[in-house]
Image 1 (cartoon, helix red, strand yellow):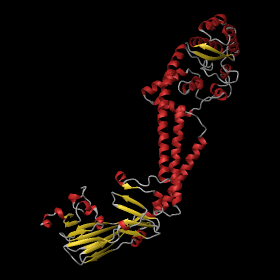
Image 2 (cartoon, rainbow, N blue to C red; image 1 turned 60 degrees about the horizontal axis):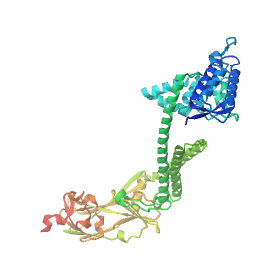
Image 3 (tube, rainbow, N blue to C red; image 1 turned 180 degrees about the horizontal axis):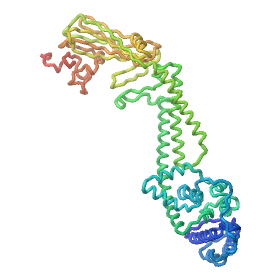
Image 4 (tube, one colour; image 1 turned 135 degrees about the vertical axis):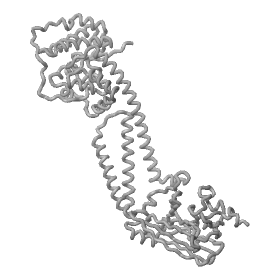
Length: 530
């Protein structure tokens, strides 16, 4: 079945075969070119169009499609353009109004977006020329593509009669007005001629068809690409918001295993109250939620627009959302900066105790044990060997301590407790170290250490840490009990075992010997095995 096209001639709709449409289009273009610069030419064109409509109605009525034979018969009746004699009619140049023309994208002569059609209408030039130039500059230098995209974004579409009048000019727009339907709208099919204002030859028409086919292919590829991007944006935004709600609202999952992330993550608001001012914590959570969720909602919205390709007057809402997001980030940054000042400086303090006895075997036991603690949440950084326990009922924080054992250089055995905290100033940080609660004791051949230290209730966490350094004579045997073995820090272990999976005292031995390079299990020391 041959393809048919709907056209509007003198306010009457007809269906016409594709081949007949091309013949009729060329005929009307020739008629328009012959009379457009002639005084009273527009009225002549209107009369010819009315006569064509009468002939088509008399041939087929409005039911059947206009065929090639009908068009040829009509041309034989009316006559060819060159048969019209208007030598006696005084020719005048086209009349321009004082209204200034404006550049738009021409939706009535578009292959991709109507940029070239708009340029042709504005400059009174065949748009085929601009299409060829864009293709050449795109293939040769690549700049044509970016210029076209820029014009596509910058130029509005002439989607109503007022804009088309500005694009063509009032006088030249009259021919366009003749091609309207009775209800005042333009027909959905392609116009029979390009608003009657510039000449399009047969070669130009052929090139337009080629460009139009290429444009359709490019548009389909672009739509597929945009749909894929849109789906990715929607899924990303949706999954991110879902994860955010599940973790920070429903607290699921409550924590992640340490072997996956090398750390134990807890519900952040539980720990946030111990870092910042409790009155500020809800504001930080709310502002952070807005700062995170708002861009995700924007991603979902733009993804939906890319998928369904719809237009909406969302400029005001987009601008309002952007302003809200920027203000949220600004306020959040100010609050975090003000709270972050309390971590600006680091203070250190230390105390040491000389061990009066020098036993061949030193026993290390744990007094306050982590296993006896009652805590609700745990934050663990595996690589940093740093663990914080939270007691919600008492509003207290407990932090694990670690023990480093070194060989004494001068033969003096001693224990050194190093404390570290952060504060607004170094003096403030040092004062905070003095508030840390930790105890140890020594009795003959036994050293009793706490497995953790405590931050006073009511005081905020300040990156507090306590490290115990024990300097013992080389050759001394050290024995741990079941709890105190957890105190041993990896940095003090003999280098042969530093990267071994058997680093834990539990899996090797609870008896260690002090060597020049650190400590190692007694089972690996030949002299002690005798």
